[in-house]
Image (cartoon, rainbow, N blue to C red; front, top):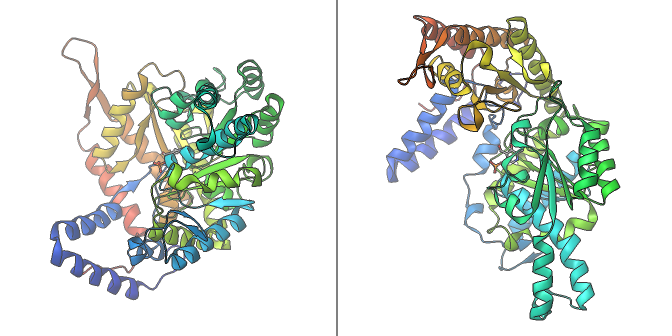
Length: 485
Ligand code: PLP
């Protein structure tokens, strides 16, 4: 494999996958075919989706095991089912790696995804900050011991809490209090945006808003903000208003693990509760995790069965393998390359005339404003896909085209850096993106004006881009030597 990923025995992995596919095909050939096709598609696409990556064969193979067959509700050593000793080993190993990697007092590795991790965090914060004091006041140990009147009081208190998170168009996530999401229903919510001229977070404005709104939870973290966040400042603000600081590092966990985000930019020492996915920049299996300070650990550990379904033993095992990989010096150089490559990509785009939200990046992602090309984000995303470049459209701050058509395209470097792309390849990628955007024009809408969805790519542009992308991909193969036969 490239210098950014752990070496693996290609002959052994090829044998393992060929045999597995044979066994699967004997029962349901369609699925074996889809698995083969997915690898072919992944190998053939210039994947710039900021939230995706390529897990190692060791991580992927770990998921295909009988650990899947065991029910293990509860936590390590306290299960609702007998015979969980191997799942205990798996969960303990993953949690130990997570604690060591992030220097966290407590790690809960059961959440099935990032959204699930956020739900566990919200539940734990409400349990710790609202339910426990209410039980104490009522002289009860457990909610089952409350009178109907006490219970109504508690329900009222739970429903009355406030959360303040980053707005969707500034780069926040749906689960950070967006009204249609359950987080916007569990909490009275408000959101903070970015400065209209710099498009950067204005900590003093967040402070003023927090002082006025008085949230129980201050949420930091993002899906589409191309900058580091100063978590020391966010904690200061949370402390000033008595809020719990929850940081969702789903996108940039790999940069924290790889020691690119250190000091004030590492959320773990500052947040009361930190949530993450394990499959984005962290390059593990699809899943989630919660890290927290000791006072939240009890409630967090009750995530299953209070919020989550039974833990997926095979995925916790794959998390352990991925976290072991992330504790190596190789992963640290990978993470640094992800950040360096994002700067190269941003500079390459700017030099060729693209406006970037916040004028650049200092994490793993870049947000292009494609309105200068006369395109919507949706047209740009589709034209790039037609040309072999996989991205996703994304709203930009105060987006005039809204969240469906958008004016932005979000791209990121974690996946292609795993493939071995460096500065030269990312500069070439910037050139290809600009060639496609320049060569695409919106079609007129039937009612006059320009369509927000339809477009035309100038003759030859898509084919030329496909060929140039294929050259880059061939020179940096995905899982080199892995042959499915
Ligand atoms: N949190 C953030 C910041 C995200 O960007 C995402 C997904 O894109 C999630 C949570 C949700 O993760 P999942 O899809 O694993 O539920």
